Image 1 (tube, rainbow, N blue to C red):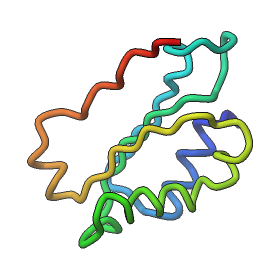
Image 2 (cartoon, helix red, strand yellow):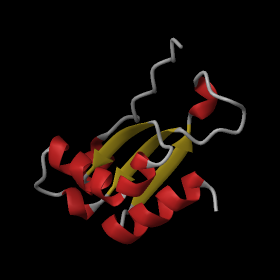
Image 3 (cartoon, helix red, strand yellow):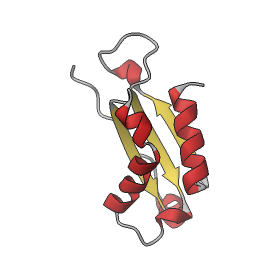
Image 4 (tube, one colour):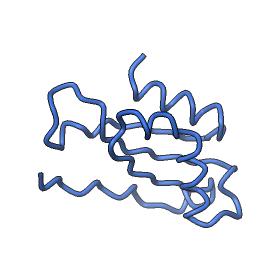
Length: 99
């Protein structure tokens, strides 16, 4: 199973998202071809209701603690409640890597 699939399965089980995207952005960085080290995650979940951004990110970090300690170098998180997701025009683009 790929790292992206593992990330998706773990987040799905822990947060029961209404929407989830796990994007491998490693190709945008100075890493070997086919690397799985840099990811962008877009999550929409009722589990985020009433939580500030830091608490949402802590939930994701706790869920993916093993991956973050074992090969995942960067994780960009975009965490929304269903209401925030409906009001959102678009998910922020990832910045270009400089290295």
